[in-house]
Length: 246
Image 1 (cartoon, rainbow, N blue to C red):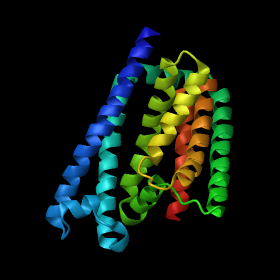
Image 2: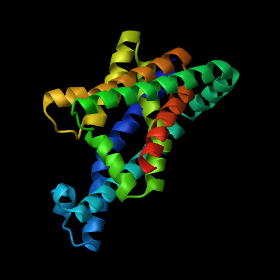
Image 3: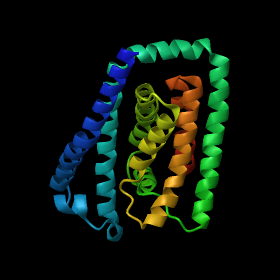
Image 4: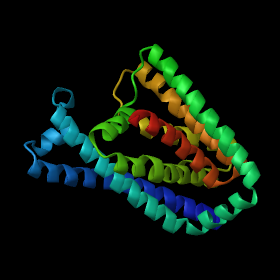
């Protein structure tokens, strides 16, 4: 138990350091490289009005895409190295309780995608725009590389987020209510950080992420297996990925 809590704490440190510091460093470096190879200045790439210039939007999107890829790759590697023992044990447990895990995976994944879709559909009817996170992903698929975005969104992000928002928070929480609240909010809020709408729109736009966070937290709570929630997360992202590119 003590070792698990220690590993979980280290997981969070790895995540925060790479996310907060790595994102700034790599975003600046990649933008700087593009500023030397395009007609745009560093400031334009980082802070320019993207709505008025498709070429600038394309460059800024690629900077964000490569930054996300590198940051998630580093977090992915760091978390796997730190939690390799746990991941190996969970893989055996996944196989040993395969039937139960498949049931939670199939039904949990189906509920996750279906209700997320219905919530987003309802919000669109109310005129609530997509979060900047969702817009950025769509831009990366349209203006950037589908392969790089696939690895970032479908492979790296789900495992990283499940190890942090589910496994690590669960291990460090002594109370189920605390686990659900912290897990759901920790998962949802980062997806809305770059969204600068009025408070009402922000809260409404947060709903799909709150729901997804709840379902994934529920899956992990009932299975205690990182592979079940991660695969459900992957399937949800993969379906959305396919819908965007077709």
